[in-house]
Image (cartoon, rainbow, N blue to C red):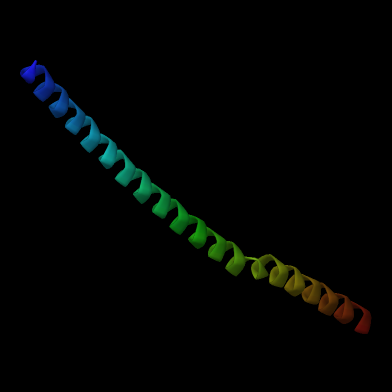
Length: 72
C-alpha cells in the first residue's frame, strides 16, 4: 500500500509539473499576443495617412494638369 501511495504521489508530482509548464507557456503566449496586438494597432494607426496623402497628391496633380491645359 505504501509503494502504491508513493507511486501515486510521484505521478501527481509529474502531472502537477507538466500543468505548471503549460500554464507558464500559456502566459507567455498571452503576453506575445498582447504585444503583437499593440504593435499591429500602432502600425495601422501610422499607416492610415498614406492612402489619404496619395489621393490628395493625385487630385492636386489632376488639378494642375487641367489648369495647364485650360491656360493655353
